[in-house]
Image (cartoon, rainbow, N blue to C red; front, side):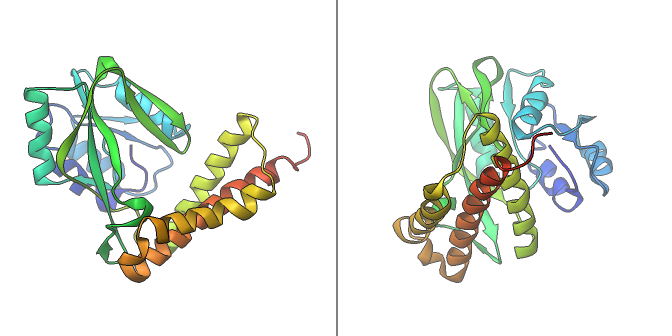
Length: 243
């Protein structure tokens, strides 16, 4: 899936050049050269309106013709060690799904603690045994059968800078609030006052985010801000006048 990812897409696609087919789904709202980069490096490119992370991932997986699917976002890069692990797993599988550890590059360093690390994601799976579940804006793959873990990192270059990070927080918190509201959830005082503080303490203190220095503090703060905005927007939803 790609939208305004001209700066990162080539690096992503080159890291999975070992795959039998490379499918890229481009959001038609993309304003840069994302589609041209995809056409140059991918096996198949589809332009498909974005209805949500979960829906887009389901659509993308449905286009695959092989038995195995590797799901990678445009801002991610498969490391050489992980690439070797993926190829070995597909050649001689011991499971129907494989998790890989995602490591984020943020504000000039790798984040090795807090809520962002370790960050195990099930991204390699046998197509017939998997489905996409969860809630927007973060869908996840789920398989029926055994799951194992791969060696090597999935590098994540999620934000160019703090401004870009907070644009993403605004977008993601809005999507999450809408999904919660559609499920019948409503926000109360505990959601607005306690959840953000609890997430900051978990990321920065309990999970050792302080070991990443100021970057760890900023990551924990951003996570807490995202949680607050999600529930504040959910609270706001319930107070909008009927259409």
